[in-house]
Length: 330
Image (cartoon, rainbow, N blue to C red; front, side, top):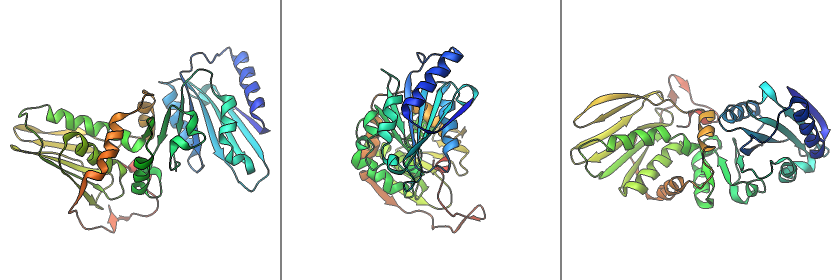
């Protein structure tokens, strides 16, 4: 069910939520958190709400969406409430702010927060330079950005490193979970030798590739070469050097990886790029600071550039134009 509330106030939205709850017999006691989505883009708003709805099936929550309208329009709030099948296991409140109210997202959010429940803020498109200092970010215990959705992902990642505050995280980091798990599992097999060096190859503007290299440099305390390529999207390969030979995890097509290592049979591994829904679900599982992500950010300044393939004008026969989507970022 979708209820539109044009030219409304947050008090009227709250009253309508209570009315709907009383009519439907549903209560908010089962909600474990409030997820605030700040969407300044608007172009992919429904995709972001769908991802939140799917995540709410594992993490029941109230979803508050702040969508900024025209700043030159008269001050008003257009509200929308979604419940039932249109809201997953949550209740979704969409607030579109116009005119001077477009800069007052925090004031619009506060009256709708669930009492005594953690708050998570998610910027699915362009995020603030310092999420912890953003007015809405200040309300949250956990702040989720996505460097891959920025116009310049690598510059955005560098900004995240400088402004990092415990509670910050990045979906570019969450997309690495399967890669990190496979590499750790490979190192748990004999021979148990120290890694002396590593090479991480990936798309030039892939923040996930940068973070993977930073993570290896920080935790293995080894020199890591970051090789940039234009022949594929996202992460392409990771090579770990040991005395007995090289462990290599290579994924040229963004779908299936091949793991080779001395003394072990070659294995094919499913390494599909993770979608936003899966990454959001994983991030909502923890509300404490992510120290491993913080360490990966610190490792970024330890990387060295390696020789990569010459830039290609085309990929799969088609020119690569426009802004890269977050779905193809890792």
